[in-house]
Image (cartoon, rainbow, N blue to C red; front, side, top):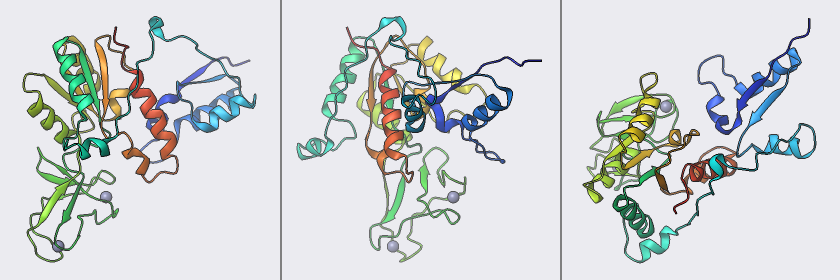
Length: 282
Ligand SMILES: [Zn+2]
Ligand SMILES: [Zn+2]
């Protein structure tokens, strides 16, 4: 008997299909295999297909189907790139550019919603001794530990290793241990300081722990008309909020430096997707 069926996979969130559990697998590859074995069509859907898929589509290796209109026929928002080096030269030491600050203020005045995207969770993203240059790293993975303010611990985002907060340098004994780098926790604190009357909600792996709390946070953001949603790439997952007319990306180029040979491609995908969560202002 002939088997019929269609597998649809949203390629947009490609990286989330790489399983963290053992055995490790890539859901897209598995879907391709299942489709082949069962001789059924596979649809890969994405606004930003990865280069391999796009290359195959352009070479007629797979069929390219185009969606030429956005939902509700809306226009893509305008994108404005701000050079933070110039901001710093003009005396702005904040993590927000003046343009973004003003746009948030205007959005608050107009009772519209804002999403701020920063792809690093935690509070400070690295800890260093100013005396000898020692940085606190994970004993298992050799990557910088991130400071989590609410639990008051240092965490490895790779293997989950945790240790106590360091106040004295384990290398030279100096107390000039400083915390650098900005994660979503620090950004939220900064936003609450700059815009004390605005309501905020944060969404990252640390706030999304229970099953479905992902949906709970997004529903709360929409239903209670919370002013500002601050989050990691989780906020990008294909949601559309009609009141969101501003999306701010904090240090948009930082993901170019991650240790992944597809860092450029991933940055393009995530920035394209994050821009699309906003509606064009009228
Ligand atoms: Zn030291
Ligand atoms: Zn680790």
